[in-house]
Length: 140
Picture 1: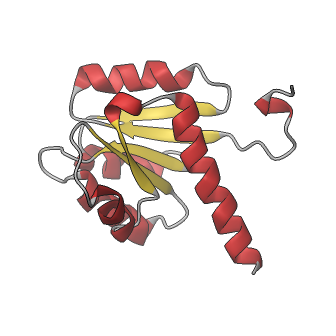
Picture 2: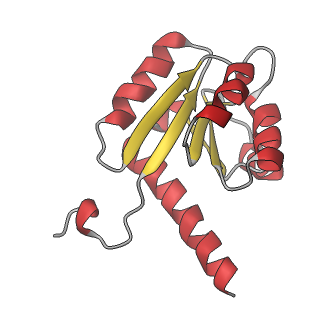
């Protein structure tokens, strides 16, 4: 079986991780940084800090908590969609709701996952799936 790195079009994802809980933010970094196709470029503890850091980063994706004080993940995703439409935003939450996925897409995010399900492969699957779908749509 070929490794993901040997695939000709294996995309490297450079992420900004955003969460107001410092312990979870560092856990996120540890879980993702060990994967060869994920680079955690920066960490932010709030939506405001994320928006402040983005212009200085060469990120192509944002992994962000939904529920944060100040600007929520939904608020930030909406702003990112307007200002940085090429960035993929993936939201995450500890608590679910029946319309969370559709709410995430309404604000420009590619989806929402539960924090309990946070694994590098799951994040890659969602990012890669959206990247592939958008490339196909551009060709059509």
